[in-house]
Image (cartoon, rainbow, N blue to C red; front, top):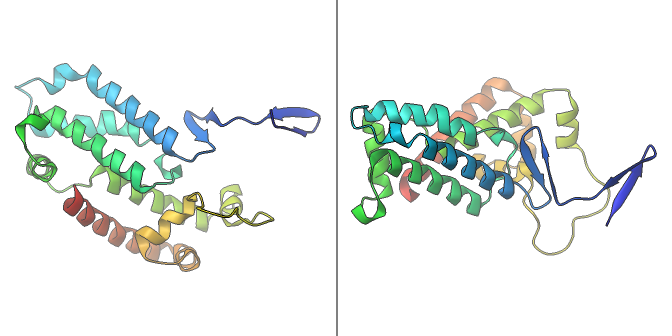
Length: 216
């Protein structure tokens, strides 16, 4: 087993550990995202008497779900590195929750877009779950870039040596070019100007929402 010795203390290498309630894994954010999906789904099941209450308005159910269930899922989402696979899993989890609230199964042959339309009719325009994750992460990136703490040092720091050959693991900051259309350097310079970055995050959130409508 690999280990390091620092100040006469031995620390052994592990593939994953829990820090402040979140899973930190060498394979990226997927284990944490899957754990959050499982926790949110379990919380949803515990409140099934509320979701099955025909006397409660759908708008009230959706607001309860977003405040009680999605808040569990979104814990520390700013630290996630999203991939195409985890994005699909986030969207699928939200759809399962909406179907639960609406009492609709896949046998009813109602599309995901129709589910979202019914949700918008109940509570008005709102962000879907994946867009919320992206917006929070971009806002946190701006906050870290403008700060002067350890987080900025780690974000902008470099490690000696080169990356291994072959397919590279996606890094936390690699999501930024995908969502903003900017290079990492340009995004960093933009993030240093609070108002400009805030406007960019808003535009990126709108674009992400439109993308969800076309793919959901």
